[in-house]
Image (spheres, rainbow, N blue to C red):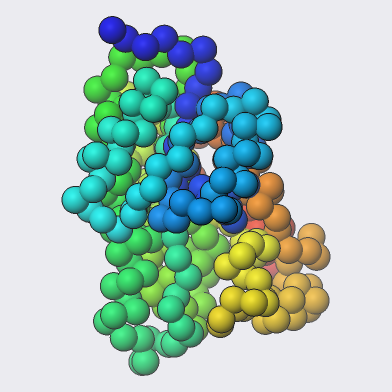
Length: 264
């Protein structure tokens, strides 16, 4: 029997903390129930689940590895079955480089680690979800896929070549899904965050770029003169998932405080 839902459902990969948590909280505020997918099921994921439930959302947490291609079909089906359907997939899961290097010192191992999650993993997990969404009966809810890329998709940062390549590739993936699904009622969007304050950019993280970015902001490279916050990205994603830009597909939405504005 077809399950009748009275609320839209969003899946957020890497939803345990950071940008994923910011997206999930903003989606909950928009009336979504949530399926969170993350590699770790721990106290942090429990806290995030409690925060979402406190905002009125039903939550299903699934432990899964985006880089595990063989597990994608089962993971997507479990997410689908949690609430009887999916209306939005937020492709947020990603990792920073293992260490800083340039293209002369980048190792195949470091490259494969980043590409395997940020690009290959997100591509094929999106494929699994898109197949389910495409074959499902339409509902009253706006349907979408949102790819979280980065300003690194089109800004060269020589110390993180594999990350730049993975995000540039993921931007193209977003465009490919957008054109492929454009006539199915599944809208595909891309969000490009700038310098966002998360656990990945904290001073405690090994190889953290925080000091360098602080100096970047102090030098006036970010016109709004501050770090971005998780909720800045989350609110942008929730706006797209709610269907507030229904005639826009694939074009990047920058959440970067003006960093990418070209000046004379």
